[in-house]
Image (cartoon, rainbow, N blue to C red; front, side):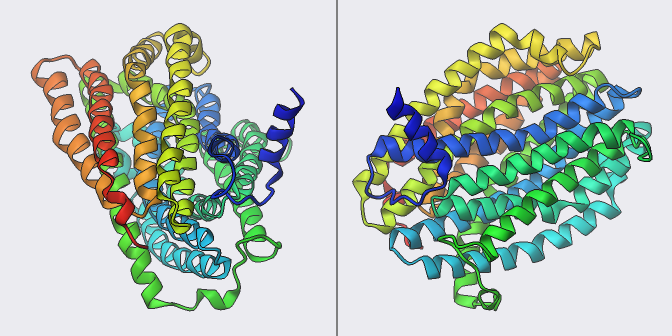
Length: 464
């Protein structure tokens, strides 16, 4: 028992470890434990907002606004995740080569490029917030009600990008503890501020839905300040100096080469989810949309920890390839698959048994609850496949082979999932249920293809 406690303490200590040398099982778990908790905290943002706004007077409008805004923000997340892929791959490879200074220079250049891109998109989101909600299927009155929430959330895109990207840098270096702590800090601030800003307290007026956006933005900003301290000031393996931000065009070229397909990879997936959200809203109405968004938030609460676990594969593949340990890199991936399958099996059982209870925590509207439960039960059928697919995708990305999962996503989401969802929901008149069915069907197909391509081993030849 003592050795397990000591192991968990080590996972939370942030102690620097050579992941190319330690036992593979230990390497996976040392990275996975803080990474899972980190990603669990990312999902808490949306759940906390959903809980508080679900008890507002216009809860249907509020829940729909939060869900649709998150769907649009997923494009911003895609850019942040795509750039963080480049950061993780480059940093992990340089750390595996025992070159932390070059790893720090790479991290600085990724930050420079990402900041410019995200700033431009955030301005667009602020200006066209109401139009974006209407485009997503929101009714004009609901869009008018939620536009300020969307405007603030879109305006904070640069903060969102920094939160994802800097954590990707620390994960690449194998320091998952700092990444985890930054999101814990951000979430604690959000949980404290949400009820104060939404309902009001003392001299602070009740801001309703707008207060939820402000709480989340302030919380994330505090988390970014913590990250920047460890990146620019503290004595860590990755230490960025201001001179590293001077544009280095050869390095930027390498970053763009890895990040561009990585961004497309997640934009493809995100746009697919946006299309599905719009399809649910138009075929099922406001209650179906609110129920679907509730189910998605619950699903992501459990899926993001699984994504965090699969991130361990990304770091281990990158570092072991840097150390020229190809066999060890592949073994690390298969060990991560095993743990993720176990985790996702447990999640499936939770959703099947406790789906009604979990949905009731967020809304008491009968129709919304019925749609949410239906979505949860159908989507949970494919959870085990989701778990395997996540690890495969992260393994490719950690190797710097971001094109393979991009093509897999393009086929799985746009050439299979969207046509299937449209066919089932409209042609067969299944409505939202048809959309729900298309989700596990597509994820299963994507997993099978990704696994076959991984075993072929072309990823082992990628240079970054």
